[in-house]
Figure 1 (cartoon, helix red, strand yellow):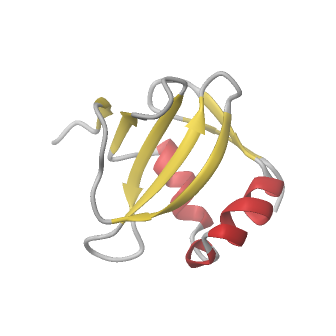
Figure 2 (figure 1 turned 135 degrees about the horizontal axis):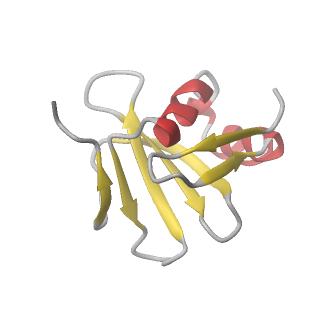
Length: 103
């Protein structure tokens, strides 16, 4: 699959590089192999975007997961405009930058 440019709800463009997907995400988090669509949706249609506690330039995107009680989380660098990693989590952490409006 080619590199993919994705836009978050705040208008920021982030690239999910194919080499990151195969060379880092799948290699270090093999449970993500069948969930590239969920990773992309976590950026384009997240439940929340949070600040990283470790790096002010990193945003953490939380999206729906492959099953109830599990979320897809994506770490992206804003200055570089690219996805760093993605994995599955049960709880969101960090200060909220943006949250999906409730209907």
